[in-house]
Length: 325
Ligand code: PCA
Image (tube, rainbow, N blue to C red; front, side, top):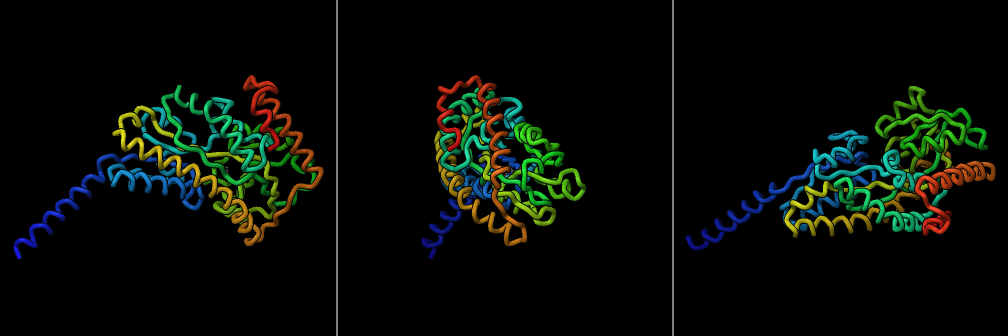
């Protein structure tokens, strides 16, 4: 009997050691969006993958919905090392570097293939810009294409004039202005309140955010314009990352590559599923008529030109071939 007990006690000890090892590397990760969005689900899967690949040596603790750090502060928090890893909406950084405006420009690209081509073309520059700030990109994942939510149906370009429209980046503010609307910056958690208090009466966002903020409580129409495909990115403080054991670094990079592939697939699947959910909840989903197509197209053209100029790109730039894809 005694001999049987011994190996048992030993294995119990080993199990204890494995549990204790879980606390070895703990990283807090602030993310901006709600648990129901594919971005947050994807981040949680990424964290699980890292834990599995490192046998529990590294734990990434996800703080979703801007609960740990407010969205506009997340980038700075990772830069300063206050937190080692985070997620942000790339368009939010458009003020500090026009590079980040690319995926907020109407009709620069309108399909997931176009969005992928734009990401492939801009990624090296994004990585270089981040490296200069002591950051390292892990992955980027799109939202479904963006459309317009409103209380009344939008039937002509003139309907945008004077509209109090939500903006979530400098680029979407610019679009509102070009449409003759009045932009107000509102973060996702405040959307319902901004509508109910009349601060905004329309917004451009995805079916995902329409569903997660229950747009049917305060809007009746969704213009499925598929106007641009913005992205979120997940990134680390480069110093904190370099201090990880090399096998843990590898596990993080592998999990990140898997998260990027999975996230794009999730966004594609979300597009139809969440648009259907809007309709199921009573929102009228419609597509732009000729007049709207022209108005939005003109604004997109103006903004694309402005962006090329700001970036110092000419028509020989490879991105010129991606425009319209
Ligand atoms: N949802 C986020 C960003 C883009 C999107 O689809 C938002 O509305 O803030």
